[in-house]
Length: 259
Image (cartoon, rainbow, N blue to C red; front, side, top):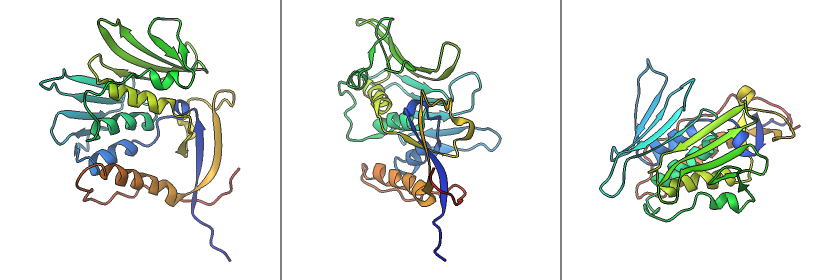
């Protein structure tokens, strides 16, 4: 009898902003293993704290029923004010990871000019009814910058399925580097579907008029290997490779067929 590869059921979902939060390890593991961020651990608290090697940046992941689950903050520097960004629980990890990847990229110039609206305009987002904002073609995402050209304010990215059906919101403070906001909007504009394993109730909607969901059986080694490859790729940006092995995050395997 031919052996059947071990598989897990996965959903490839588009648009990615409606794919649910995903696995936090996509963000936290590379920050620790590839970028040298240290982590705190309190077994009595359901939270994760990661701090950059220079102790200037802090990422906090903490379940907050009435607020943002992810908070990224950075201390003031001689040439830059302190800044913060925060993300709701259902913000896809791929979007948050784009921000942390840009922050930790040693080749990324700190003061490089960036227009966060540009990636969205390139794929057909249109001006919103209110000032200084863009809305996605399907009407489910709205990106806005408060303030004026003379005094620019905070950025808000809001995903909702209707007036009373919020999904997630991301905030970037007025002093957050534009290149980090642009990294987030570029990931938001990416048309490629994202993989979710055993998505269960994590999807904000399964309405086929709003999302495309392709369910198939995926090799478990592929799912585990994607994180390992991400760690290796980010580590290659730095002089020293990661010294710790990537912890195995293989989900329980099961057999099945594509459908």
